[in-house]
Amino acid sequence: MGLHGQSRIGFASNWAGGQPNALVAYYGWMYDDGYGSGNLDCRTPSAPGCWGHRQDILSFAQAARLTMGAAALRGAASYALTIVETSTAVWPYSYSWSAAMADGAGVRPGSRVRRGPADRRELGS
Image: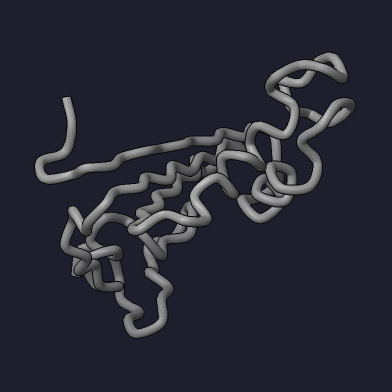
């Protein structure tokens, strides 16, 4: 299985749990991923998973086209990213803040007020 018209495709993904926010999770992947860190794939100094998250992030330096997706679960301290390399552009990108708000972005837990760069309104209005 592959993507139509692609001569090259690659991907990597990372997950972090228990971090206070996505920035700290990313920092851990980049700078605290070796032996003695919280990296579950690096339980011994010579484990092959040591610095694997960092390698995932840096492995596409020469890529023709990159796509990145990220996710965070509210209240679960769970963060993920996926990076996909393709030889040519695959997806059209057209995602506005209005579309993101329609998908639930900008809502504080327990609040009905959306907060965003261009729109503040009550949910359902």
